[in-house]
Image 1: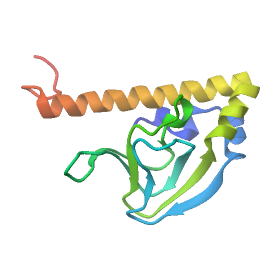
Image 2: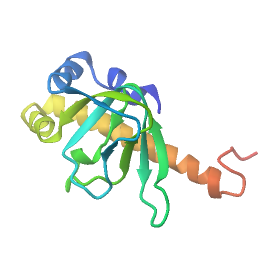
Image 3: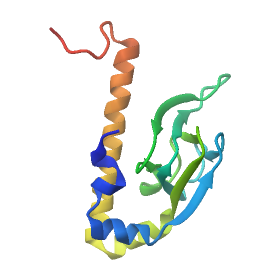
Image 4: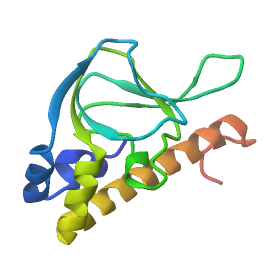
Length: 152
């Protein structure tokens, strides 16, 4: 993931500090599930240490890993958009320390402070755009006749 989507670079210091005031520190052992696809998205995380894999349920198989996320990265964006249902699952692939946020509290602050809300919305939008681009590149690598390389 590009540095433009990590917490330290995506939000101005005053917005970052405002958000961090709503955080609580949590930790997950390797193998712990943070959330499951199709369940209610009522929180989100920023990774401090460790790695989290985003995965997709595949019937009759192990979940397919879509992306691995690490330091400073946002885990979960479904909390930001109704109907607030996880589109993927997430699992700690190593011991993880993270900041956890109550989604409703953050959405309420976004509504009460429009400048903060816009900053958060732009950040979440950039994360989504980057992840869609990364998914497109992976699909091209898997299925396009010449991979994701440029045309010559």
